[in-house]
Length: 347
Image 1: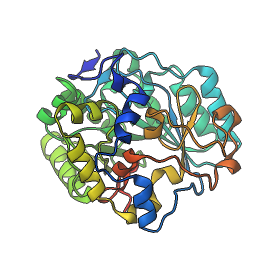
Image 2 (image 1 turned 135 degrees about the vertical axis):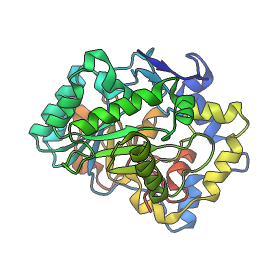
Image 3 (image 1 turned 90 degrees about the vertical axis):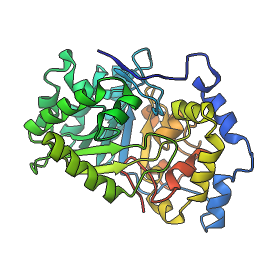
């Protein structure tokens, strides 16, 4: 069953398009430019270093509709990576030594090519991560999915807004918390989070217009509360700042929190986070094969600079080493406080 939380963006609204979001993010309103803040702290411009992660976004189709989703994913989305594009991803991966494949969506497991991407990446001896919403593991057509993931030693990076139901269901839909707990129990049962090498990480996003707490502190809370309340074990917690794009941007505007939140991000800019920004070591592939510096740029339709190939079929790793990174005001979300990335804190 598709889980649906209240959502603000409707197809056809200005914020449903990347240009509408970029227009709002580009307004000055007394807000600093990200590029100026970089330069003032000794970094004239961001550029890539050695690419360590091939992130593949297989599309926006999902069994949930979450308030904070920067992908604007849901059951009504038709943007889905084809088998041909999936094969191009694997062919390009085989030409490199990129060690990590990070599969995301939407609910990536619902893409018909998901298992192909996992199997072929593992044949190439790459570490595979699955960005999982947990409830997908309980869908009847996915009855064997947990066993498949364990068999292929896929790292699970699972989104769970909080260890209590009220906050989780408010963000993700009624009943999602209990569904998520059931899924975590299934993962524990096959060895995830049990010290077997099957890694289970929880991703925490704040439920509201504020920055996440210290990662070590919220991890300690999650570990204790999930074990005490539900006898569930996890390996780690990543904290990720809510990005001012898509549904979360709409929420900020609707609640008159946009400028306050942007000032919060800008005021919390931390130059120590810059070296660890994920865009420096990642190449992100969109559902149609277009290449981006990160998943956030992908949602704003900001592909990589022309210096590098712009589609996975033409991917040349050497052209993406030292390439300038496309930045904008939304990037303050990754440099605020202790930093934010797909791997949690960066500083």
